[in-house]
Image (cartoon, rainbow, N blue to C red):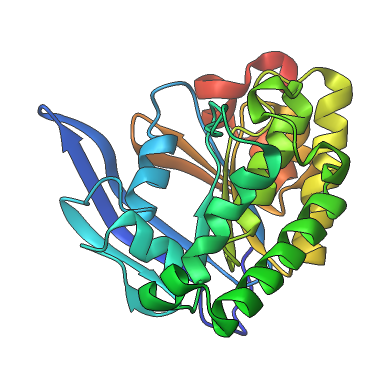
Length: 261
């Protein structure tokens, strides 16, 4: 269960949202503590990505509150939430395909640029120093993710595994405290899934991150998550450690299937 020695980094309290009379998420509660790696699972249409969209400001909850670092997120725009230290990836990789690997990461770095518009136009000393710092940061991230030698390549031309690494590197360029991963193993083969598990564990420790993960690949979820919440029809039906979730009758009936017991 979650630690009780610190304040939650992210807290959702009785959050709900409906679309056309259909309640997509109903009274959802979550406390995510610093350093945790937590999974959010459930059948298709259970409301998992809707929860991510609520957290990141894509949707506004019709009821409930969302707090990050103690600050209320309700009503904030996605870019404002990203600036608070929260980043996400998507199930369908959303890279700028016509831009280079380096340019994709550089776009994310602009969130923390300190130089004024005037300084950017005139390219003064402060601007040049800022550019040098950001270039070093980009090179370091690409090196870490094994993409430095591909920095000039178009993102669209990369194989799936490298595109996924680039998307995570771009998210990390915003200097997040919390990383939301939406089905990072989607489309991956078994070998890529194993490599992804190792990568997620590594970046959690390397970048001192808290991670919330949506995933259908049960090998990934059970292999890396410290605790798991299960959604079905917008409601939480189970919450616990992987070994508890694996044996929960409600989860087996709703999602995992008998062979997963």
